[in-house]
Figure (tube, rainbow, N blue to C red):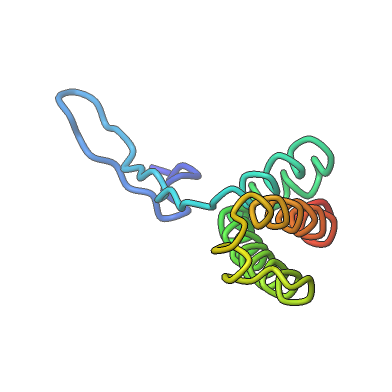
Length: 122
C-alpha cells in the first residue's frame, strides 16, 4: 500500500475506535508583546506577500518576537536618552509631578513614533 503525503512527511496516526486520526500538535503560542502585535497588523494589512511567506514558512512567530524585542530595547533607550537630554530628572518629578508627567508623555509619544517608523512600519 502506497503511503499518503502525510505519512511521507513523517506523520503518524493513532487509532480511536474504528478511526485513524493524525497525530497533530498545535504549535506553542509565543507572546509577542504590543510591538509584535503592531508589526503583525502592519504585515497583514500592508505587506500581505511578506506576511504570507513568513506565516507559511513558520518564521512569523520568531520574526514577531525578534521585532518586539528590538522595538522594546530601542524604545527604552530612546526614552532614557531624550529624558536626559531634556533635563527630565527625578528631582523634577519630586518638585513638579504634573510637569514631569507632561514631559514624559511627550517623550514617550515621540519615541513611539520613531520606533514605529524605523522598525514596525518598514
